[in-house]
Amino acid sequence: MKTITLAHLTKLQKTTKEKVTEFYDEATEDYEFWSKDYNMHFGYFKFLKTNPFRRDSMLNEMNAQVLDRLQLQKKANLITDFGCGMGGSMRYALKKDPSLSIIGLTLSPFQVQQGNKLLQNLNGIITKQNYNNTTIKSTSIDGIIAIESLCHNGHQRKSLEEAYRILKPKSRLVIADAFLKKEVSQLCLGTKFCYQKLCHGWSLERLSTIKSMEYHLSTIGFRNIKITNVSFRVAPSVFHVPFAITGFLAQKVLKRQSIKPQSWKNLIGSFFALLSGLHLRSFGYYIISAEK
Image: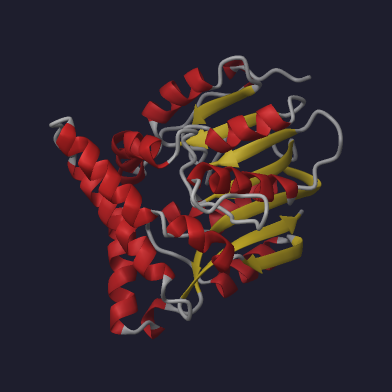
């Protein structure tokens, strides 16, 4: 089994994504309330397997759905998590398959420090890198996951190009994220308002359309592109948002703790994520797999 250390990686480059970095440095503690496993994403409901009233069971099922779509061969694989957060998905994967090795990428120094503490005794490491321009060697990775992370740079083409560069031939990129079904200019006033508040609250550059994502993947060279709309599978976890917001605020009040400005932004973003999800003609949640 291949052990990852910082010595395996070259000197990391500085990032200019200050807003995203600040968002995760300041709001990570909010996510502990959302998920005891620090899963910084929505969940996947599967009948007779997950409990819609137990959020973490759905969040971990999303991890399982994404990892299964990598279709990894039975060997010691090295995969990368683009935008790994506190390493919740990494820890799930490493406990499920101890033969895996995982490199996580984040812009947040706080997540690097605290996330690596949670990864002790597991074969993974979180590094401070921009997934648009990593220090990872070309054609060296057996799979890449990106769960609600590429939205922070607007689902840019260069993120997909970087994924293609570091993937081995016949390996897969799997993305789980929200996308627009139409261009922003085509959104009605109410939907556009929700979209703008969502992007501001969660420090998102923008959301791409699902058609644009498919186009970029195919023109970069990815093949066997499979796009699945899982909005209704994700909806039960999205409906946890108002209860999580209420619980978080109540906890702060009872402990007489102040709420940081970034936490307010995060709460507002979460609320508008719920409202946006109700506009099914304009928004959708998709799991995408693409093979190099």
